[in-house]
Every structure is written in structure tokens, then in C-alpha cells.
Length: 331
Ligand code: ASP
Image 1 (cartoon, rainbow, N blue to C red):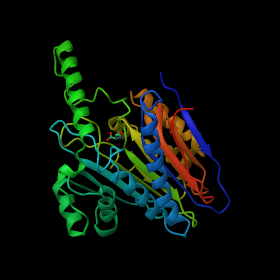
Image 2: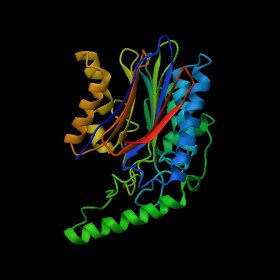
Image 3: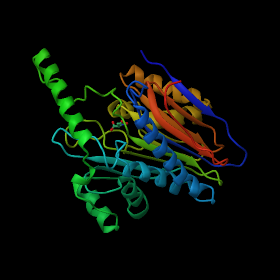
Image 4: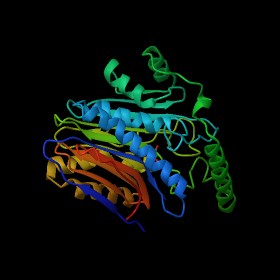
């Protein structure tokens, strides 16, 4: 059974807004200890503050979403950058994308293992290459040539993810034995576990320009080479000044098939559907296809949603009043 939780915010006159997520999933008071809750609240607030510092000085939404995502990529709390989920062969392969709502410019990287901040590489692809999406070694070489920090892949690996992979493999093995096939190979039986932690940010600046960014380590136990929705423009990320900036999180394969991010924008563009209703329709489509997850989005007037059909989603928002609001559980 899926339940929808929506936080809807109304626009403030002539103002900016930043909305972030740190992944959706089985995020409940039972599974998150009070200490973990505090850590998440502090980190989400720090990410909001980084974006606020830019937006409040009249800076671009594009810079604000990047700044917020970098804070979360650098934190081991989330499944992006340091602390990412591990592949079936104990490695990290990171995906990220960014989009500029002014002109539909976009940049993305997929399957990178050495770029410290994949969102910065996505930004470089958008601004310094003729491409939209670069993958693997070529993307890493490009990022290095652009002067980005390159790290040893071990930088991203944290102990709790090693343990998580072991657990996932044990469960997969059990499922295989029960079914007599290797049906569970490369699957993540804990997909609805609270390990979700993809990060994303969307913003509108004082000029009404929209931007969106998403970064992830993808699903645990994924086959090397698997790429999810996060680096796919229109699935994991989308921005268009006339509609919304949006970042999604959840079972990537389904979000790609639902063309989830664009699906929300298209309903608004062609049918004038209100944002909260459009987001709910899209999450319903995702649910019908067997997926779950969450969506954050903001329009050019500062109306925003933080919506999910999982038990929780790490999320937060800040506007011109400078008061950060963070939450993680369903109401
Ligand atoms: N959407 C991500 C992926 O499938 C995972 C997530 O959002 O947690 O790669």
C-alpha cells in the first residue's frame, strides 16, 4: 500500500526559494535513531544555508542548487559522492545531472568513480562541452582536464555501505535458492529500506530563473554499468522557467520509464494542472509501474512541493525569510 505525503508551499512575493531532498524510502522514527535524526537535520540545514547564501545575495539558482548538492555529496550520510551505495563488485559508480531552466541547457555524468563531486562534472559538461551526457572514463578524463578534484575510488567507500552490500547479497542469495534461479542477482531486495539517499536540489532565484540538480550512487548491488534515472534529463532532473525545476528519487528504472520529471512539467505545460496534483499523478504512474519514491519541485513564483509515496523522505526548504525547514518522516 502506498500513501502520499505532500508538503505544499505557497509563493512569496518577488522572492527566491530552494528545496532539497536526501532520498526517499523507509525513513521512519523506528529506523532512524535520535542521533541520526539530529545529524540529518544539521546536514540538510547546512545544505539549505549554502544555497541561501547565494540566493539571498541575488545569485543564480544554478549556483545555489550546485552548492546544496555539493554539501550532501561530501557527507557520508547520503547515497551521493562520499558514502554512496556499492555495486555488485564492491565499487562505486556515480551519476549526476544539472539543468538550467532559462535555456534548457543540461549536463550529466554517469558511472564515474573518481570525480569527487559528480555534480560539478555535470555542470562542466553543460558549460564546457558540446554534450549533455558523458559516461565512465571519458567523463572522468574530461572532469580532470577541467580542473575538478579527482580522488581514489576508495574515498567514496564507507564501512556501513560495505555491511549493507553484504546484507543485500545474503538476502539475494536466499531468494535465489528459494526460487531455484538467480532472479535476485544484481537486484536490491532492500530497495525500500531507508538506505535511499540520492540527493537533489531545485531553486528559483530573484529573477525567476529555475534550476535543478540530482546526484546519486544508484542502487545497492547494481551491476557495474547500470545507470539509473538521476543523470537522465526528463527522468531524474528537469528545469524549464515556464513550468518547474524538479528532482526525483526512487527506483530509477521506473522513473526512467515514467519519464517522471518531465511528466510533471508536461501536465502543467499542456493541461495547466496545478503542481501538487501533477506531482501526485506522476507518483501514481510510478506506483502503477511498481515503483516508489519522491519528488521535489518549485515553480517560478516559488510555489513548491516535497511529495513522496514512501514512508519518508529527507527534505528541506528555505526562502527569502531565511528560516530553514527540514523534515524526514511522513506526517
Ligand atoms: N534514483 C536512484 C537510482 O535509481 C536511486 C535513488 O533515488 O535512491 O539510481
